[in-house]
Amino acid sequence: MQSFDTDVRNRIIKLVKGILEQNSLTADVTSSAKLVDVGLTSMDMVNLMLAVEAEFDFTIPQAEITPENFQSVETLERMVATQLQLANAA
Image (cartoon, rainbow, N blue to C red; front, side):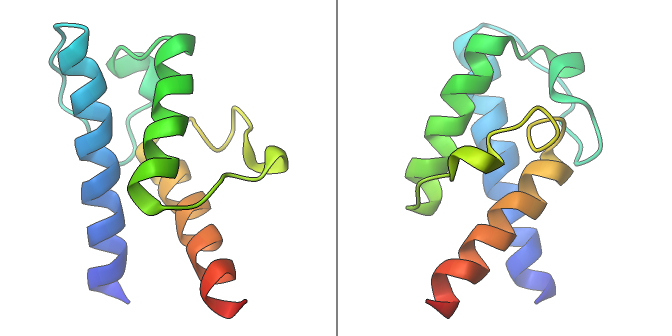
């Protein structure tokens, strides 16, 4: 399970860094850093949501598209892991 979590975290960090690079920004993206503090705007959050859906091949349920789930890599990672577990259980 640890390698699964690390893989999910690394993939999310890569997505966040990719969006920052598009904006000509660089930041130390840690799992606990708030995404707005590293430089993501509300429009970037929409792009991140779409990128997460594409990266992990699922649609984020409307109820999960909350500011709380998009606060940090850590909160996003928890939401993605939950959605992947639900998809695997189905």
